[in-house]
Amino acid sequence: MADNEQGCATAGADPSGQPAVALTPEHQVDTHRVWTVPNVLSFLRLIGVPFFFVLIMQYRDFAAIIFLAIASFTDLIDGRIARRFHQISELGEMLDPAADRLYILATVLGLAVRGIIPWWLLALLVGRDLMILLLVPALRSRGYTSLPVNFIGKAATFCLLYALPLVLLGAGPWVFSLPAKVLGWAMGIWGTFLYWWAGFLYVKQTRQILAAQPALRKGPA
Image 1 (cartoon, rainbow, N blue to C red):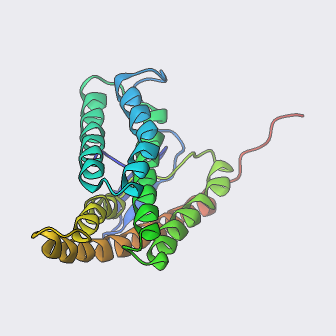
Image 2: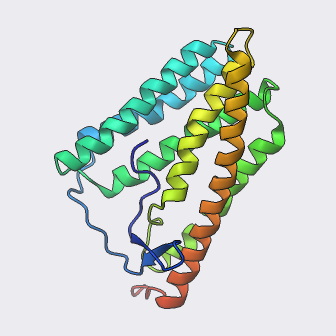
């Protein structure tokens, strides 16, 4: 997938190998334009989420997987276009992870409604995103809009975006359904673990920011 979950800080690594935050709210962007090619691709990917969900609910599994593959391809090329033509923007860096999370949510919700996966898996994934959402007010008080990318978060998103379609195929009557189901669940369990691991790292990064920087002063009323 493209560079996901990147925000308005920079990331490095501490001696323990865990991502560290460069505690500055400044972030290098190429443009503040809204209508760039990468942003348009991200908007189109977001618009496609409800259509993707409908395909799952209508049991049109192959069509849903092809739809997701196309969305994943646009996710790949918009990052390359942004870097190649200097169109990296703060909006784009927020749209990319939002689209990935919504496709994950649409997939797990559809699979849970159809009884393919247990509801507790949906609760685990949604609970992690709610935990990250609760960090936003604290980050904004220090001038940040989001947290920097880390490798574990990208690996988790990769695992889940490939695991869930395999689980969907595993529910079918085809000859490849059993191996797809086994591989899908293996990647899904590992991806869920990484998803929460990345979430706890984001909590740690937020605590570092809060400890290192004073709250922004409010302007005169």
